[in-house]
Length: 118
Length: 115
Image (cartoon, rainbow over all chains, first blue to last red; front, side, top):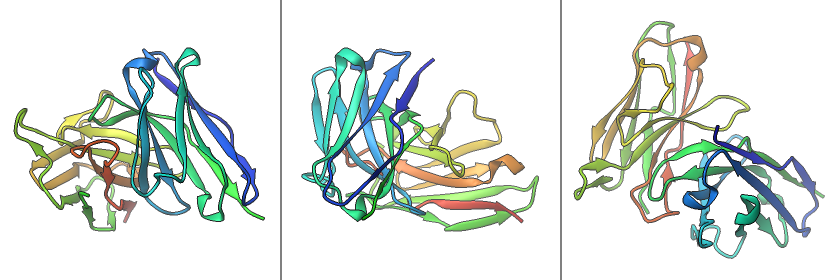
């Protein structure tokens, strides 16, 4: 069974750093892209970026370039999304999603809620 | 960027009636080399991640009830629920994956409720 399991909810202060994770199982982790999607409170879905764990090819949507870093460790089938300095506006639910390469997202993680507040 | 616009923003339909959600893209998402529309539909229930319903504009994901269907081509697409059930209350999103990743874009969502 394909599963993407994300790390738990986080509460952080502005200026702090954070790295959240997404662990894949039940499929060949290096053969599919992993995307990250943001959903701000009460809002819609936004693609942030995507990584191919097989060779670490990483691409960012212009809105998120320079704001976050996406990485992966294929040895433990885990993708990451990290911030070096959080802002209150980063408060959102973040989902990872498996994507077959220029294709649709077929499996989604359960989401990680990030709350940034002083 | 390709802009996806859904209509309506919200919709109330009686149980057992048909629900129709529209999605329009700012440019064609039909790839001429394989004649496929790079368009998906997702369902998101409160407190849950999105769930894939339809891909390639009209192919139903495994396990999705056949009351859900997708149609359209080029720039205009429709998600139809033939006979609304209580469990279909959700927000529905269309998404294009035609653009070079990760410039995939979603529609703004359509909230479906029971009348």
